[in-house]
Each structure stands twice: as structure tokens, then as C-alpha cells.
Image 1 (cartoon, rainbow, N blue to C red):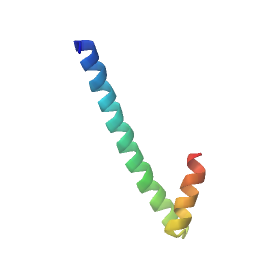
Image 2: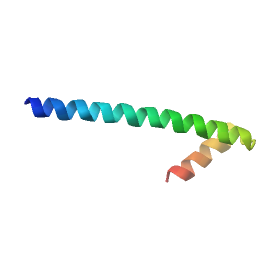
Image 3: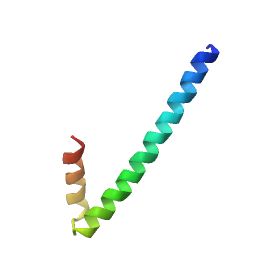
Length: 53
């Protein structure tokens, strides 16, 4: 593995961490919003599936 390969791997790892953090934040926001409008957990899950597609 060259140093540029190592650098690319490190950048992909950082990108993966950022995406994971954003997913967690989005999930938390979705839970807050669905709770405010009174959706149940199954309803919120179904809504999330629709909005992701």
C-alpha cells in the first residue's frame, strides 16, 4: 500500500464517520418531529422509509 493509498483510506474512513454522525443526527431529529405531531414509532418508521426513497 502506498502512502497515497493510505491517505485515501484515511479520508474514506473520515467520510464514513461523518455520514454515520449525520445519520444519527437525522434519526434524532426525525424522532423529535414525529413525537411533536403525535406519530407512533411504527408510523414514524413507515414515514422514514417513504422519505428515504
